[in-house]
Figure 1 (cartoon, rainbow, N blue to C red):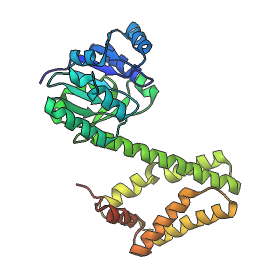
Figure 2: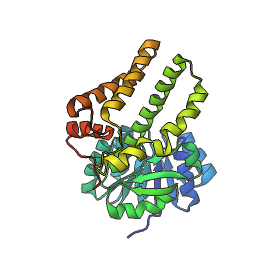
Figure 3: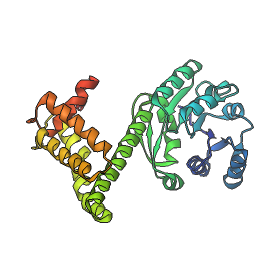
Length: 302
């Protein structure tokens, strides 16, 4: 297995800049490219390496090329576009997309590069600029097993751990799902606290009081999804009809207060639908069967 020595890095923004800096410090022969030439010049002045005259020039020097870019469309353009990286990257080369990209686009990119003998590893990160700066990013990675083994030391130079996710595109899929959950959770909390403020509760008081009610061992992923749904036990002891009633209380309160509560209303509608389909007596965790039935899948341990 050939060790990666020559790296190309494309995208020296708030995340990419510090990530590339760790690679320079780790001793890789680094060539960088950014749409802003000043960013590239500043990076090399501070951290060493060289500035690529073009994307093709960068690809011709690299064993592997890392992209850290805003969208998968830009990734596709810099790799497959006219004069892009793929025009010069040799067989056996690896494209490592650390952007938050659409997994379907990642699979398409991998399919396009496969006949050229180039592998794609999707390796998105969790954590912001602070973690990028101190190399404690959590990195998910997916793709060909041998290619992933080759790039793991590179990835470890930028993060505190690398989690293999399976076939190409899987890491990007997981990253998108994680962000979706976080986005839902944030506005869910905001909506609940907004209803509470309309009722007269203090915002900081609610935040402090809700912490032990919904986090840690009380978080549904830890308390219900993993031990109850994935195991098919469905035995929390609370009936589906009862929690539906409780959600209804929140919706009724919001309406009475004229509070903005679209998430609560949508949530209630899904629980009511589950009760209509499965009855009010089954355990609350059996609400998962609504999504299983509609999606044609089963959420259980492999």
